Amino acid sequence: MLASLKEFRLVRQIALATMTTLAALSIAHAAPPAAPTVIGPLPFNSTPGAGLTRDYPQLATEPYFDLKLVGYTEEEFFVQGFATRYETPALARGVALSTGHPYKTRIVVHRPVDPAKFNGIVLVEWDNVTSGYGIDLHWEYSREYLTREGYVHVRVQAQRVGVHQARSGLKEWSPTRYASLDLTAGGTILDDSLSYDVFSQVVVALKGFGQSQLLGNLRPKAFLAVGQSQSASRLTLYYNSIQPIHKVVDGFLLQVSGGPFRTDINAPLIQVLSENEVQTGGYANRRQPDSGTYRRWEVAGAAHVDYWWVMYRQALAVRDGLTPPSLACQPEPASHVPLRYVLNAGYHHLARWVLRNEQPPRAPDLVTTSLSPVVLARDENGIALGGIRQPEVEAPTATNMGIQINMTPGCPGNYGMHIPFSEAKLSQLYPTERSYERAVTQSVRRNVRDGFLLKEDGEEIIQRARNSTVGTGRPVMIH
Image (cartoon, rainbow, N blue to C red):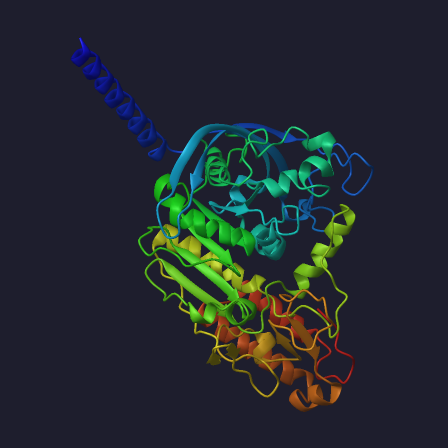
């Protein structure tokens, strides 16, 4: 009898251990991301910036960019479902920790009204939440290009800060509109471990396996994940740990952050870096070589964020009662070297890489004089050497840097700086208006040839140089 009882207990322990192991294996090999429920599109019940209820999408694009004029619409949806928590070990496959956690978040879709304009590419942007609210920087940088070329852009609020942050998070910013949102499973999960599956589920919904109203009757060919700075870092973890499991994204473009990246992931990735990351961020000491699935583009003169984005962000943030970027700096903060043109080329090449297996161009590195500490080599004007060299550094009218030197204390360190040349120096460099236009045109043609500037963007830059006052003796206007 005693022996039988011992045997029973042993069998029971083995059975329980087996069940526990099977349960763990079930979580570790979680099913592909589910198709979530989609609610919307949600109406604009108040004019952006007007009234106290704020019953409109936070940081709505209009009126600062006229979507109707370019044949686009902006629609907000709620997405809800049950997500899996993932651990994301460095450079390793993700581990599913638990599943079945309820969530509800918002996404915003920018798409062409006319299906004939759609180019087949959907950019899915992981919102940056560094400021305490979600920001879709890729859209804000490249909206003119994306709407010109027929992309769909989707911003995804995957992290709890964008929903739950005091005052600026969606729930408190507009309880009228966003009170029901939750990315913490009722306050039980506070580490953003749901964010990866939430992002994947949105892509699944966009692909049409769930609700099809997100894209209307558009037929996508490829889905590209994009992020900037903080969200690029999150997408690095996604790329290394979640992409091998879910495989719902076709390619990645990460701006001013990210890495290191696994080399065995069969999804192409382009990384665009400014001077700021290469020097102060230490990327010069951990450069990852280009490969059959990876490109690193370093942009001379560029900063973590540029002047043009700061100006646009100021207007939207003030309108919506959010904290705007600081401009209380001397000398003038924020480099005027635009990243948008290089990003535009990046989207173009990444799409062709995914759809046609056409390899993008390889870019030269920024030149360094020291790696400990990292110091970039500069010419007599203080302009960095090497890297992708846009007309702002090849036909300069100012010194633009991605780092700050002798700036007012408290200035954002990643804005870089802009020091205009004197009128005397401009007259020496460009004695006639035509000489400036020729220098810009030469730079544009080389960049277009090398693949770092699109032809249409180049024509825009040349036209701007043609209309400039450089070489006329009149004051140079910012443009």
